[in-house]
Amino acid sequence: MSTQPASARTVLITGTSSGIGLSTALSCARAGWNTVATMRDPARATALLAAAVEAGTPVEVRALDVTDPTSVASCVSAVLADHGRLDAVVNNAGAAFVGTVENVDLAQIRACMEVNYFGVINVTQAVMAHLRASSGRLVTISSVGGVVGQPFNEAYCAAKFAVEGFMQALDPVARTVGVGVAIVEPGAVTSAFVANAGLDVPAMLAAAGPYAPALRAYLQRTLAQFDSAIAQSPEQVARVILDVLTADPMPFRTQTSQWANQFAGTSLTDVDGAAVQRLTRPWVDA
Picture 1 (tube, rainbow, N blue to C red):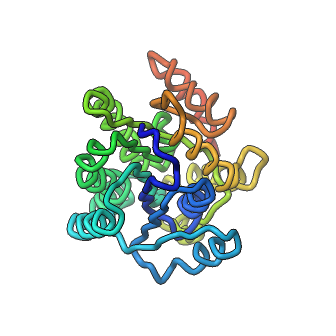
Picture 2: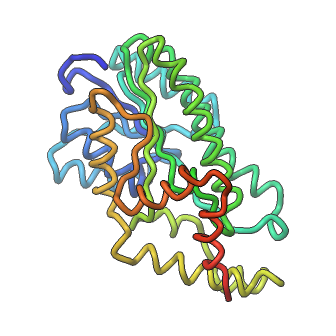
């Protein structure tokens, strides 16, 4: 990566209205980066801007809808026009989705893929030439769900698995032109991410049919996990992301906690798949 001081470098971060994205924008700004915090609706930037003022760290907010290539291109062009360069991009925007294939519409699965996978591709395609020009870095926020398939998360995990495969394949190619590629895998995070999934638990159970007992067991286990000791704060995850962004050499895959490391490792060393199934099947035992 460029040896310029952080104050001369520009980072663009997607999905910064809350949670990991908001905390990452603040962390980068505190570290001296020119921080462009993007979100689909800038009217939702109130919390970010208030935190930035309190911290005395300027953050620039711009509109960017990762599912709209025109929006992505417009935002990236404006950043280049104003700052002259783009040194790093953090693909963070994403959306949770809970449901099993028999009980959801294909349109819902496609929508999940549009945000969590094709949104990443839209941004990556728009920024690669600029990162190549600056010998910059591309960091994508995946999930432990990108290496461990989890019950009632078929669409979400499929999107994150796709992101991981895409970035793993891109990495050696991008490095030939000076661009570093990395993925970061958080576990449970105490943020608005789950709330933003819009889970109406009674309605979900009522519509689950024969899957209701398994869904009830899954939700009880998973929602409790987000309130447990293993859950990280968005600030803790953001510190890991900043470390990855500035590491030399930059690792390709990083988990954000020891728990996430162990959880992801179950799959990464599981040749026949039996270990993952032993791990996840009890989650849906009624």
